[in-house]
View 1 (cartoon, rainbow, N blue to C red):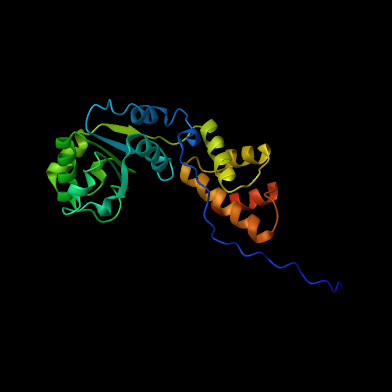
View 2 (view 1 turned 180 degrees about the vertical axis):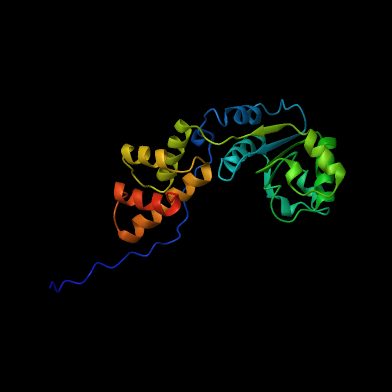
Length: 230
């Protein structure tokens, strides 16, 4: 029996990921090109407000960050929209309100924000995972106003965009992956942006824990853990 000590497992540290949100880092495909075009068309929007809707991890925050830079807009969560904060929030003339369908909302304040921004001649970008009818809103005027707002929609990714997203997520984590492994992952994973992020997160963690690069065997292990065969 060898007297050599077994190789210790490395601790997977929760380090920040270098997620770049520049316009040059936004990957455009059939699922998001219409949304990108509508956001980029600012200030020639059909209304003072625009709803940006798409599934989790679809790139809403990235696209909103691109617009915020162009429009010199602030970005807040919907929980930060209160009656007292509205005068300050509209003062810049452009605002992103993220995750409007998530968590606690002050509905009268959000309605007031929309009206006040329009009266000021400013612009408002609202992000959400679903249409307003699914938010559980209780203020009819707010629901009506949101229903009438133009919507930019990000759909689930096509095959080419899914592969490109996987590559970008690995690059963000400074992981070099063989093209054959990308193909393997894309063919066997769930077809969604959220699944791509979960898969890359898992492989990043496993690679750190095992102290090895991402191999086909490691990729197969991650796929089996996240998307077990039925």
